[in-house]
Picture 1 (cartoon, rainbow, N blue to C red):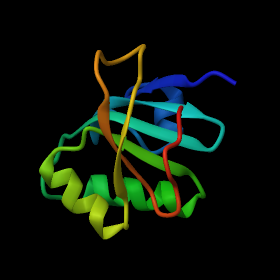
Picture 2 (picture 1 turned 60 degrees about the vertical axis):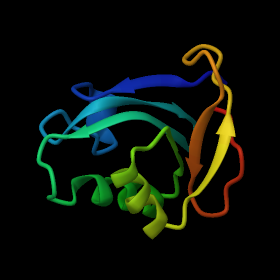
Picture 3 (picture 1 turned 90 degrees about the vertical axis):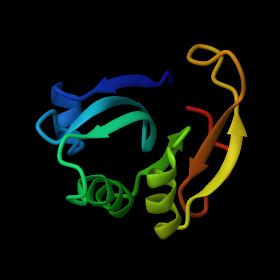
Picture 4 (picture 1 turned 60 degrees about the horizontal axis):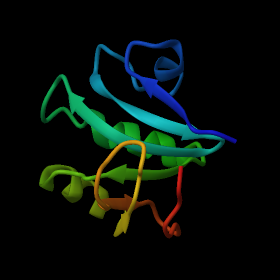
Length: 109
């Protein structure tokens, strides 16, 4: 199965709680795997990103985050995400840092 790109402002994004009124960004989905490549919260310091990640984990998604900034790393540590390095040849020139949710190792999407 091929990963599907999902952006904010789409029905697929809205169904995942990745709505345009709260976020800007994109992710990839493959079955029950979500790989968040880019996210900006429209309302900073409101906890929306943390709520979104919690929701995905509670719904049973395997969540990974590509190249998280320090504030995102702080959030991911709360959920016991662990860093690794991966290569996404269709998206990035070099290997990139990817943080995986609890119990996950390197998962290609």
